[in-house]
Length: 110
Image (cartoon, rainbow, N blue to C red; front, side):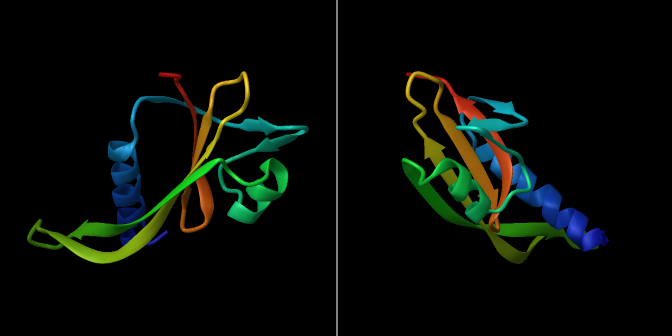
């Protein structure tokens, strides 16, 4: 991975983490008989879990530091959050970054 690629990943993860409200992150999610894991595409997740109950999408700037230490915009990425209301189980929110599943969270009920 290049230095720029590493900076992009760090900036995206920092933004996604700062924007997330209180929730419990998990490594996998069960949808019927299938397991959902980070790294899967949106199409793979939808094929196993069906359409989400709610979606949000935002374009987020990708920032890096220049040689003087100032933050500069080097691009942008798409963050998409899908929420599944799973009946009697805790709701789950899946966060996709540029079409790939990055984070699975179980949400607390209000």
